[in-house]
Length: 74
Image 1 (cartoon, rainbow, N blue to C red):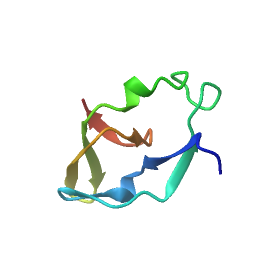
Image 2: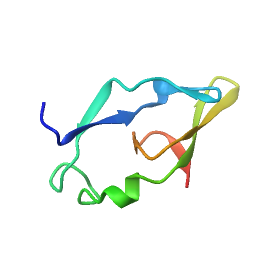
Image 3: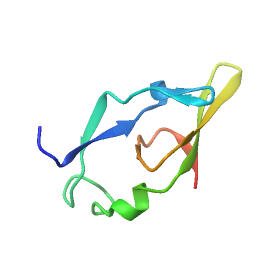
Image 4: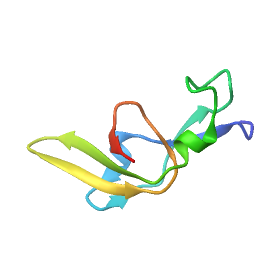
């Protein structure tokens, strides 16, 4: 794996007020990322919300790549 592969946060990484270590990686360069690989877009702190069951689960995520299925607020 090259340095262009970076960890990405998936819904299963989100716990109430906590974040598990990431095990999913994506190719983060101009051809592999829809935004063209602009790191400034993805390096913002966010509040991530995962909806499972009856109650949403949320945590603060320091600048990191997020899977597209997560709700997030910058």
